[in-house]
Image 1: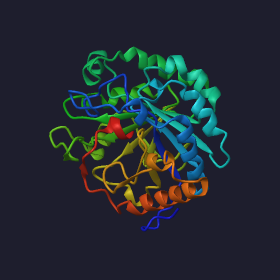
Image 2: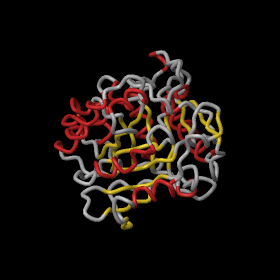
Image 3: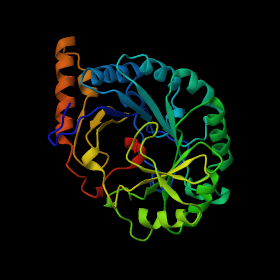
Image 4: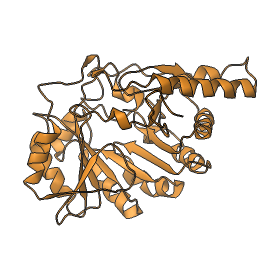
Length: 325
């Protein structure tokens, strides 16, 4: 698939659930969100059918997201089936890390390539506040379990928020000095019908970098495991590395190669803007034979690819937990 801006689409992010065991302040509104009914959520069989069709159109990389993907029963079975699809060469997962102590070994055995772990503070009290009740030790234990299980290219995603955790930037850097982890500082994207920049809490990549440099010299990295939109640096003497994702100050839309599948069956062109097609209706239509269904799926993939904007609008009208942000 080539979109109308000449970008080759090869990456599909799949939200397997809109449920999450945490309620992070930047991801979910205080009152929570309206969850999908069970029958509205794609089955594993439907997800696999979509993945196989995507592969036939050039998709070769998959990321499993949520909500929190590890709350979905049988998730490792889905991963095994996806990794066995010919043409898929990379299957990763984004998780809040709480259940990794329990699942790390099983995820490794399932064929999962890599893990991205979201963590926005190193402090117990702040973690409790940011996640509205979470226990940070669960995440720390999960990180160690992942490293012990032998995962490579593990990424630690940190959304920097002024007044919430911007004074911890150097603490995060020190954490990866002795761990083989790629720490990625991410600019805050406000959610829920706001302008993308929440000016009171927004911290730019340039400001973050200045604080990182106080810990050690930054050395640019040209190649790394898993790719992605981050600009990566090694810190002299560190086992891990540091990356910066500047989605707000320097959008990377021109290199975007991804589509998104929501847990309720919407194929989306962009996290923020563009458009979507409900392909669950195609899969569940009783009026289509197999060929007609395949043709409609192909049309849907190409239609959504053509919806991809040349650059996002800067407006985020979505709740991240519902679309696998």
